[in-house]
Image (cartoon, rainbow, N blue to C red; front, side):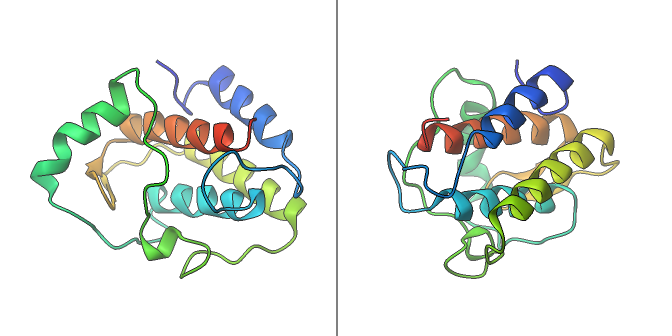
Length: 151
């Protein structure tokens, strides 16, 4: 099972991230590649306890969806809205310089892998996730968005 905690899996994700440019065309959705980098960085900050995102939905109803997203071999659905704090057109981090934002995301990936969190940190949709679950979620989430840009 791929996860950001495994060095080889994280390195493969970083190589794909580095293949992006500001001109990379999306295959679906509305985000630019630059907005996507900031969206992923904001999501990483949530898992590190550095950013809060509004909880959405019913935790009981999302238990099954959480298991599907984390463990089922099916793609994450496309064009799903996110919370305002993770949406770069609303309250998410505003893109700065592309190369700087890419380096910031890479640094957050490394920090996440190096600093397992001792407590369960809340995911806005799935509720509390262990560090292991966050690692799996991040890998799936980043892969989903990289596929959005053909990377």
